[in-house]
Image 1 (cartoon, each protein chain N blue to C red):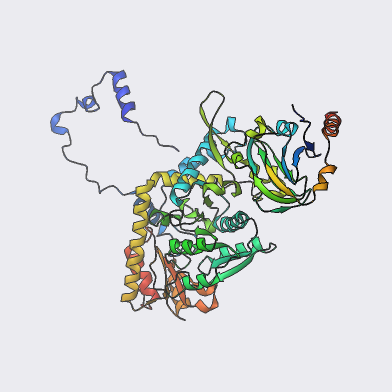
Image 2: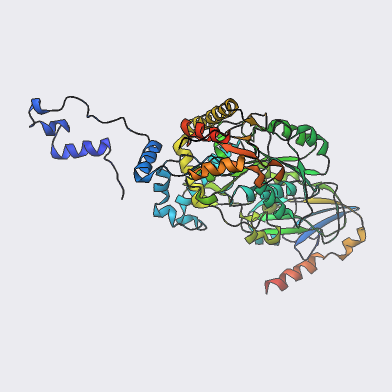
Length: 129
Length: 448
């Protein structure tokens, strides 16, 4: 499923799984495909306060680097340490093992502003033209 | 013109073709009584540097010679370095962006990187920077980035080359970085008590020159231990690469980034350059390194090959977030340095360093005999500072009239050090010359 229905999305091709006051974020199937083989993921420090829209890290493939933007505001509560040794998890399983950051939400209402799966599908269709 | 002597194999095959058993057999027709039975009356063979010296004298007198280092060290580099550099494959090759047609260049750089990593005792070295001074500045910026740009203080030893300090100030002028100087103590090394006082939670980097500008050997391990407990990174700068043949490697002593100047290994000082800055660091800092990196890999057929790698650090991909704006390296100069190093080998480099050390120790003893005092008491490598006094200008001028630069008056950099003369002795300086220069600096009259 390249656009899971239980997630929310952003225009920067990130996804967020919101569970009460904690959100898990990563990049979408479309994003990992566009980047190519991921070789390195630069993640923020645990404990860092981040704002919605802030560049909090980067995803590096052989040919390009893409900033990772936070879709939500809050505190970084965890990062996926496995990505240090197996960055390709982002390519193989972007919504599962390829998760990147967990955020303790400061403003849970911000999640409502994220794109629904349908809205994200529409965005991709528009970009494909 | 190239001279390529026959190998034993060439000779053997030629003899086979003409059907002769040996070269001597070709002279069988010469009567026994007429054959020379003793060695030719020739003096013993000269080594390369003796030969160069001799030819120079035949050509019109000894060339001018300087007993000055101060960042540019004169060493006897084998002429084979020039010969190999002149190979068009190296001389006219451009940047190896296309690995499929640049394997020679890439392999040479990979081997250069390997040598510098070994010499500095660190995990990875880049393809070279412009020079030691800018390499030092880039190392400071890198260390600041490693600290996530949260710490703003950089402690710089007063014994870092003054011109390196100027370049560092230029690089950091527009940045939220504060440069603070740590003075030297009477031994000539960075004052560890002062360093301990100045180290705090805001210190990102400590910069040390080893051996330092005054020729004094620094205790890098002690400085590194103090820096580490304050959470700061140590950067060492080594303008005299031959010292790496004998000193404890910076990496081993706790430096996390080691840089320096390779000019002394290229064979031509050329009024100060071009040379190359070498730059090495610990593996965990790899992605913060500036400069080009060559890596080994396998091609589509599984055969080993080399490529420029980790380009995502560089500005053509990361733009304003790149680790540096450098997008070049000193390929030909770094190649000269690596050819020189491979001719010397680790043992040869060590012997060369020991030779340099011995010359300086001899010169220091001579100075003491002539009544000259050393400004600093600490152990030195191939440079040391003599307290010549106000007569220094005059005495250096007298030597210059005889085409000898006897040392560098430090008053040029620091008015408080006028009359203190930095003298460097390498394998290029014979005993007679050293005696003459030290004598002149002590005020002894030159024979007419």
